[in-house]
Amino acid sequence: MSDIPADLRYAASHEWARLEMDGTVTVGISDHAQEALGDVVFVELPEVGQQLTAGQEAGVVESVKAASDIYAPIGGEVIAVNEALTESPENVNSDPYGSWFFKLKPSDEAELDKLLDADGYKAASEADA
Amino acid sequence: MGQRTPLYDQHLAFGAKMVDFGGWDMPLHYGSQVEEHHQVRRDCGVFDVSHMTVVDVSGAQATAYLQHLLANDVARLQTPGKALYSGMLNERGGVVDDLIVYLAENGYRVVVNAATRDKDLAWMTRQAEGFAVELNERADLAMLAIQGPKARARTAELVTSARASLINELKPFQGLPEGDWFIARTGYTGEDGLEIMLPAAEVTAFFGELVGAGIAPIGLGARDTLRLEAGMNLYGQDMDEDVSPLAANMAWTIAWEPAGRDFVGRQALEAQRSAGDQPRLVGLVLEERGVLRAHQVVRVEGVGEGEITSGSFSPTLGKSIALARVPAATGDRAEVEIRGKWYPVRVVQPNFVRHGKALI
Figure 1 (cartoon, helix red, strand yellow):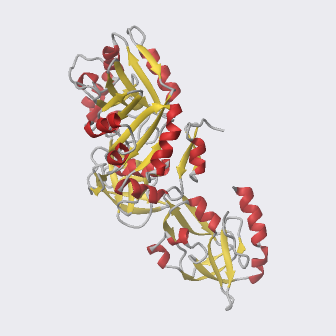
Figure 2 (tube, one colour):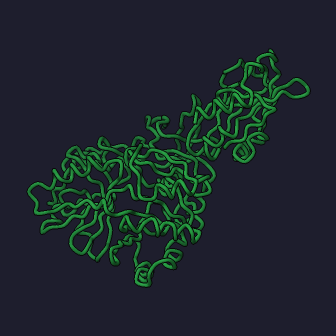
Figure 3 (tube, chains in turn brown, purple):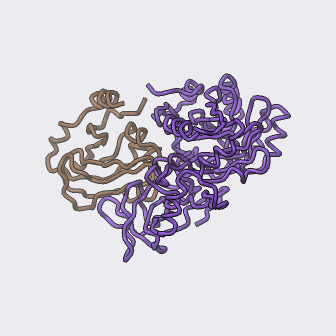
């Protein structure tokens, strides 16, 4: 059974999003996603300054097995990327909710409400498995 | 639901993630593919390879039959139990399958791939016409591969003394019977180790003993990265019925002498050899971050293009490696296209890791 923290929002494409105190949104991939991928060996991050719309490709995560795209769960400007992850991509497996990929300055905070809550994501990821 | 080996329930009990492989439900990994890979390189692990097809070849003309069927020459097998790797070719010189053949007491034992079982048996039966030979598929046998630097020593502690002495005496690429077990010092990882064929009824207990003794179960995921590091081909990916062994790093498995031995595919291979027009299978190493994958395009400046046939991350080397079919004139540099960008790669002999040591 995968871990789905209640304080995060989720995209059906398996990214998590956390609204921070300063209004920015941090993005990573879920425990379910890292488990399905297997050992992660490579991540490709977006560029700082890049404008993303919700659902747009924002990077790539590759395991030994396969490559998988990462999508922006909401629209916004990329204000930071987690460079440490390119050095230690295996952290995505050991700590999926600590291993953020990028931070966004949302263009419309209300888009967060369109994402799944923990219960909704739990149902979606179980149907997926 | 796919076919299941006798170990299916044990795989689930050990936490395996199961996948379809050539119609069989097989373990992909039991937690971490990378950990399992290191386990085999550094210590040892056990693979369920019961899905593979074992065929015993007997009869007065067994030797003549296999000399007709295979590109390698079973006459090279001079000592009991000695094994040979060979391609089984079609008339066009394409690879129907790759296999191992052991010299047995009353003929030969042949091990072919699981996914190609039906077409292999049909092809072998068709080619047997006119030969006094019997083919006997041994579906009653299960098979375990125990691989790694400690595989032989650790396994010898768990079997009868007769089997333990055999394990100690076997030479590389040799397999001999002991009772109703057949124990071979062969494998698909680039490490020392064993492949043991035993009655299906005995395999669940033996597999349990091996795992109980700390020999970790290893899934097909690590099997693939281990064989890739060892530069060993995977049938259906690195070669198939439309690929010549000359274009698959298998030239060494073709026994051209004696010139009079008319094996299936010989004429086509001779024409290819004199034309000198075959591409070659090489190794690629990506020095930058990223992962090489099958079917990515390889570009060789001033020479032409090729394609990756197998690619992955190499846990031992900590970087990505691949097998690729490229024009014969390819030098030591090339480029690979990954998601629209071109990355420089080194072209090397397709043999990256042996006995735990990096070769590149």
